Length: 174
Image (cartoon, rainbow, N blue to C red; front, side, top):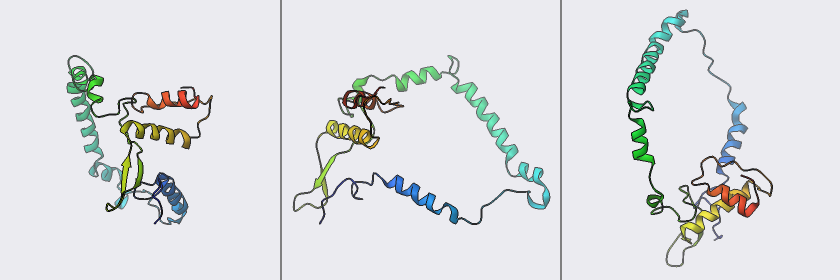
């Protein structure tokens, strides 16, 4: 048996998305028949568009707009601000109960996986959630080939953990 590593299907395939993209690109020219919309049945393009749902779609869009303006508009009348405060203005105390204590990241961590001791089968995961989150950050920074002086744009990676890590450990500007 070979030792499990991060590219085995048991843990996941970090380059799987790249492989899928290469497969799609490699086969894109094999598609011979591409549907090109033309005139509708018997040349009645306009009638078919209305019968096909265009009019119904426009009515639905208008009703959705009215519903938004009446119930979800960001105003005191719509009550949306009250809903935002009730659902999103939560203290960090809540998040520290189930996220790691250092970075407060809520995306998947990368645990150290090793072969399970006998008589168990498969893999076991070692380390704490914090260690797994730091491993994830190091893996992302290494794969991005971050170097000192590079600029990093963090667009929603938890509480800025990626930005802080890239700046402190790799010397990046954020």
